[in-house]
Amino acid sequence: MAMKIDEKGFNAVDIFLKEISEKGKSDTVCPYCKTRLELLTNNTSYEVKCQTQNCLRETFRGI
Ligand SMILES: [Zn+2]
Image 1 (tube, rainbow, N blue to C red):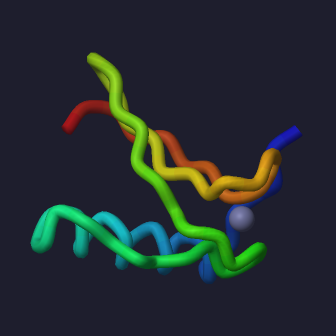
Image 2: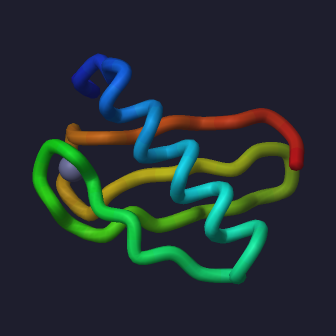
């Protein structure tokens, strides 16, 4: 079961996506477990997640 993301998590995801779009990379870390966030993309959606299972994970539709 994935944990519910609160404002802290959403803020980190926002910063991460902004840096990715501006610089093509980001060193933003998960506010909960302090590991690097990563971006996974597929055809119709993309996903921001940290490297810990069942921690921060946010899926978006379309790019
Ligand atoms: Zn995490």
